[in-house]
Length: 285
Image (cartoon, rainbow, N blue to C red; front, top):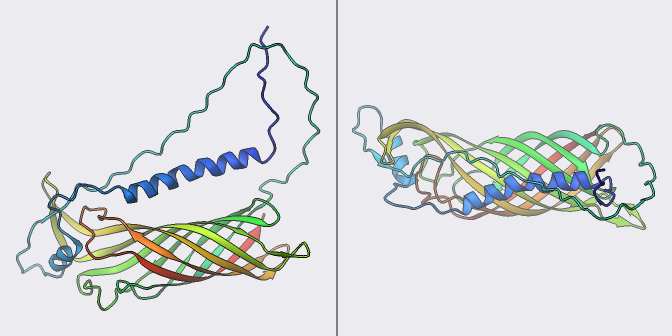
């Protein structure tokens, strides 16, 4: 006769906590990848790439040295092991039935739009637009995940004007906010903490020839990753059962990877501060 496992009753929030923990694993892996300093070798920098990209087809081009291009790494697997117990059976009183929850109760989706500015000289201020989703962990605590895209313009002192065209930024933003209460009622203000993973990309005005030791290759575009912890404040402008509108201000520091996706050494983008002002819509399910 098989004996049941001695497993404590699981609260209805445990699956959500496990899901949140597992979702942070690839985020931590992404941060580790940014801190991973590949061997520099004799890789050329972005300034050299900009110089070659500014040449037209009639000028002689130099083959630039790079590190091997980045390849996607599989996400770490999470293994769960169960252990059986051969102890005597114990009779456990049945738990009271849980309250029935609506499908997707506590979840919401919406649009996020706003502007961003950095303290460095590389990029001029620009606008972002994207989608967001969120979950109410508790009546006063809310988690949000958004994906935004924004076209950019190089700053006058960047050295990339006329060499790198059509710059843009794609940002994944994860944050959590806690509402401030007064006499037990929310005041419409919520301090928040968050973390961003951003890729700034561009097209070479003229193709660049690069070699990482495996043979020359022609490049037409490139990307540089960064990460940014930040703090901010969300203000509730509209609060109704069918729609909420928040005004959000974020400020933090951005740190760039040591090399681009195509293997060029990052000799131009340095750590910098940034500020974002956004409007968020929330449509509950």
